[in-house]
Image 1 (cartoon, helix red, strand yellow):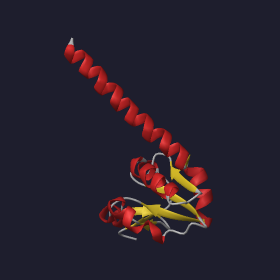
Image 2 (cartoon, one colour):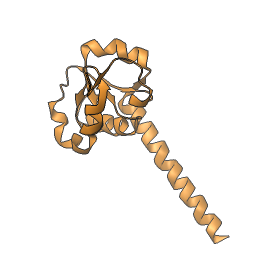
Image 3 (spheres, rainbow, N blue to C red):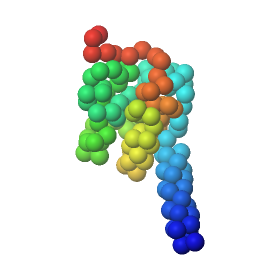
Image 4 (cartoon, helix red, strand yellow):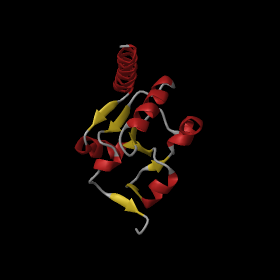
Length: 128
């Protein structure tokens, strides 16, 4: 009986944690599909949050790499007067980065739904 109560409390806490990040992410950024993301790319800053080795292997054409591991120390180089397009492997790091940017006063933040995993557009590869 006690184990069941503990399990329920853990599940509720986990659910609350997931709900918090979901709502915070939705408040900080707009999540868009690839087609809309592509339409925004020419007038925006594209930030790849994956680590350098992943970025070097392949990334979205025109993206700048700011690894999430150093993002909080490096995001000041991102302009506030232009849209910021974020992506990572999925969307978890992008959501956290968007929340950081929103708190710092950035207004137009967009996250690629599905992340780089689902990207079928132009890519820059290590081999060219």
